[in-house]
Length: 180
Image (cartoon, rainbow, N blue to C red):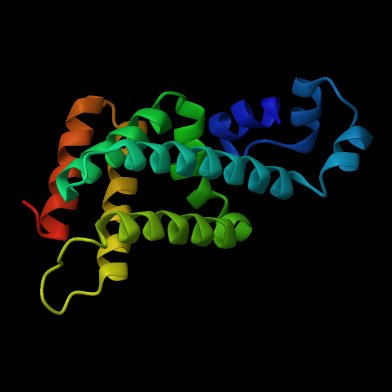
C-alpha cells in the first residue's frame, strides 16, 4: 500500500505496473495477488482509505465548530483543505488520479461525493437555504467547486496559497448556502 500511495500519485495509476509496484514494495507478484485482485483493487483501497480519513477529520472539525453556518463552513473547509494538502499524494489520489483511472474508481468516487454531500447537508440543515433550492444539489455543486480548486492547487505552475484556497472555497460555500 505504501508503494502504491507514492506511485499512484506520481507517475500515476495508468503509468504504474504491477511489476513496478512489486519492485518498489520489495514483494513478489504472487504476494501482491495474495492481497489484491489487481492494481485497480489496490487503487480503490487507497482511495477509500483517503476518503475515510478525510471524512473523519472534517466531521470532527464540524463537531467542534461554532454553531453558525459560517462557523461550520469555515471549520469544515479549512479542515478538509489542510488535511488533503498536507500530503500531496493524498490530494493527487483523491482529486486527479480518481478521474484519470477511468471507470476503475467511478463507484468509489460516487460514494465519496455522496458522503461529503451528506456532511454538507447535515452541517447546513439547521439554516435556511434560498427559496426553491435543493440542498443536496447545492451540496454537490459546492463539492465540485472545492474539487476543482484542489486540482488547480495540484496542477498549477503557480500554486495558490492554502489560505487563498480556503478563502475562495468559504466564499463559494457561503454564497451558495446563502450566508454571504
